[in-house]
Every structure is written in C-alpha cells, then in structure tokens.
Image (cartoon, rainbow, N blue to C red):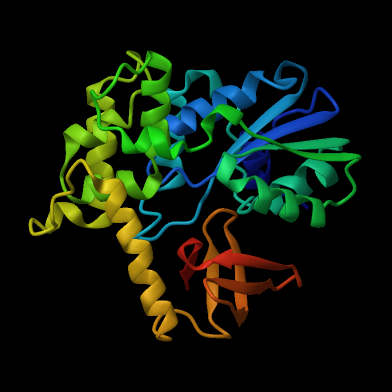
Length: 301
C-alpha cells in the first residue's frame, strides 16, 4: 500500500509523457558555467528538439572536493540562469545515473525512443554506455552541439589579441570553461574571473553569481581557509599541470589499485576497478557493466 509521502514524491517528480521520444540531459554542474547553458539551449531546440519531450537532471552526488553543491541548490540556479529549462528538471530521488534516467523513461513512462544531450567530449563514452544498456528503445541517440568542439588555436590567443568576431570570442570563452576550473577560481577567491564564466545574460545578475560563488566556497570549505592560493587568469594551464600530477601518482602506484571502488564523474556510475591501464581504468559495476575511465574522470570512494 502506498503511503501519503509516496504520492507527494510522485507529484513532485512525475512529468507526464506526451510524445514517443524523450530527450534528456544529465550533468554534474559543479560548478555551473555558460557552456552548460549553450549545450542545454542547443538540446532544447536543435536536431528536432521541438518535436520531443524533454527531461533534465543534475546529479545528487555530493562531496567537498569535486561535488560540493546540493542538487536543490544547483537546480534552483540552473532554472534561474537558463529560464528556458523551467519545469523540465526531474527531482526523482531514485534517479542517480544516466542509466536510471533511461530505465525510468522506458519502464515507467513507455517512451519508444531516447536521446541524450551531452558535451562533445562525452559523445563516445555516452554512446557506448547508453546503447549497451538500452532496455528496449527503438532508437538511442546522443545529441551534441558541433560548434562546442574545443579549438586549441582559440585558446592560445590571449584576450584582446587579433580581430576576433563576437562569435569567436564566445567560442573562446566556452572552450576554456570547465566545472573544475570554476571550482578552482572559487577556492582561490577570484570572483572577477569566476563571474566571467557565469555569463548567462542580464536576467542572471551579479547578486545571483555572488550567491553561487559564496555557496561554492562554503561547501568546499574555502571560506574557512584564507591560505588557499589565488588562481590567475591562466588557470587552464593549471588544470593541465594537475593532470600531469595525477598521472605521476598513478604511475607510481599511489592513486588507484585493482579492487578500489570509484565513481565515474561523467556518468556517476559506481564501479570496482578490474584492471589498471596506462592512463585509464577498466571498471565493472555491480550489475556487471564494464567500461573504461580515464584516471582524471575517476573519484575514489
């Protein structure tokens, strides 16, 4: 017998199916940046986006280092920053991974086709994951904005150099953004650089950006540590240095070992390390799904 709380949960999370195809997006959004907006807006309208149902998810995983913000806080800011997504966010507490999204769409809602909106660097991993775990959809497709491919030449150009068009300037900004970069800027107290990555339009003002910045710092513990180093405008280079550092730890056996439990950042899958490769891990979930994760995409549990 269902309890009253069950009906309340269903009312909060049930989005009634209308069409036979569901388009979804699943992200960590730790921290949020303008690239998330561009990707979601593309997914809402392009490649047949006007002819499908949409349902969006932000992950529930939470830890001080890589996932400091709560789902509730992220969802509120995502809807404020990207008002086109209001009413599309599903808060079903049972959904924790993209596989959960897919199974719910098929088993409970009866959709015949499934589409996932992802960033261009996630296409390969999501195609393999979703198609291998397809519960019975006629079609499973991955949608991405082809203009969001990272352009190394744009990143090499300093701000203000050359005669970049407004479109190229926007592409340069988006190409340089990442959730880890935003977290580093918040950790270093660099609000001026942080707010550049939060350019969602006039409707999302500095008061909202500041609230997000301060909550990110609080959740990471940075507001209690005045000694956290400041991050300069070349933080992208620092991310490359961090990957080199992780690689060195891994090669010397001080990062991951066979048998360790990890969470895969792009998909939120929980798995055990089955084999260690040169710069990647072969992992297996409890359900028996095997996948490859680069070491910088794995968080030890």
